[in-house]
Length: 246
Image 1 (spheres, rainbow, N blue to C red):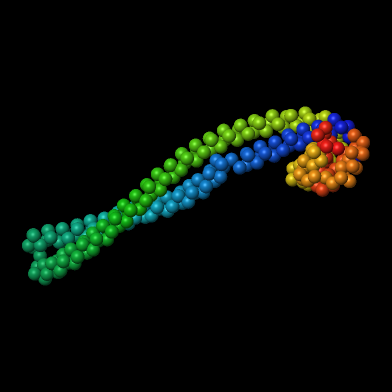
Image 2 (tube, rainbow, N blue to C red):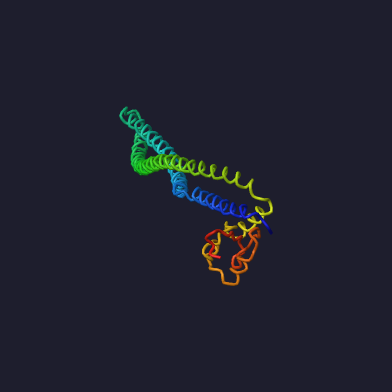
């Protein structure tokens, strides 16, 4: 392939722009805030799930407490009614005996119900405390996440502005490079880790960093200025400059 030496030199400028774009894209993808956000969002999801479970448990225990309280109240009401009948003295001896036994049973039942209610209330208090604590942690994480998002978006915006300027400069430069030379550069760049063209600098390839042997250097020195030469080691386009050393 032949190409004007000036167009070949433009490839080095284009390569510099493309390398800068690659660097900016990597910077954008690896912002520290992005990794921190992912960690916080994951933690927030775990805490949110725990908070929901604690809220469900607290609701269940609150229903159990109300039911236990109703059972205690019902037993107390019945015992008070029996006490009133005893105090009235109108019951027969047989009924008095039955009522007395029933009141003993009701007292025992009330004690059991109150113990059960107390246990439920203790569990409810623990569940409510956990629910509120987890909700507080979730709110704190929400604030951290929002702050990180603002910081990430600000830094990403700066990178995107710079990338936009580089892309504009690249578009201008691409328009000045012949299509066949550009197509070869793009193909080699995709094949060789983002570097399609490199300068021959002091007898070394700027792409693979290897010093060319004497025979290869002699062939390059003998090639016409418009001949597009390639590195024998890495196959990239080699652009000759006044500092090539040939």
